[in-house]
Amino acid sequence: MTDHDPRPLRFTSTDQGEELARAELYGLLARLWMAPPDAALLAQCRVAVTEAPEAGGLLEAPWQALVAALRRTTVEAAADEYDALFGGVGKPEVFLYGSFYLAGFLNEKPLAALRTDLAALGLTRDDARSETEDHLAYGCEVMRYLIAGDDLAVCNLEQQRRFFRGHLQTWVAALCDAVEAQPQAQVWRHAAQLTRVFMDIESQGFDLLEV
Image (cartoon, rainbow, N blue to C red; front, side, top):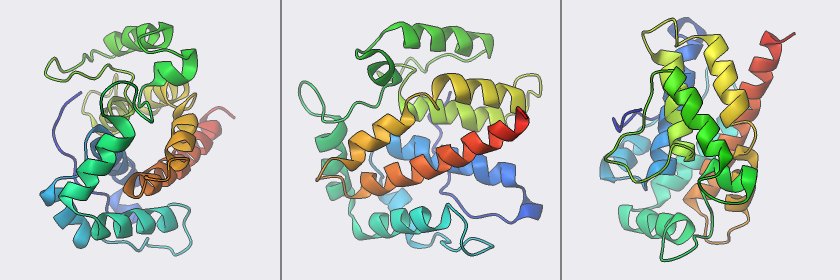
């Protein structure tokens, strides 16, 4: 897992590669769930493409809504919103960790199982980060790596399916529910909606592998 800032999503055409679009979207979601956007990311959103190659795609409307929200906000307002939702002193309004949704507490068995699977993939947490590996941003980073990485023994559809089924599909919808229930969620309401739709699409895609 790396703290390299991913580029915002560009809707790529089929001949440019759907896998690239998947990796870029996971990268953008990792960036937004880890920290509020900085000036560079907001500047990229001001020129981001918002139309999909084929109108009416499931991701198009939530992507357009998120880009619009990012264009309306400022670095300061986004930082305040992120802190109000996910930071602050004591218990945050919304937890970003899988263990909380799966076990009711932080640092529980789901985190231990995740660490075992990450070790099998040859991945470890960046020691410079304070967040544990079950943070949503880390999960998105892992998926981006499994899609776009060069090690074909690890970076393949089967490993993507296993990781997604075991460590994202089981709890991300509950996190999105929690974010959307917060009145102060302006930017992250739309991030949650895009995340939910994308995870649904990913789930359906992996369903096809299991038929």
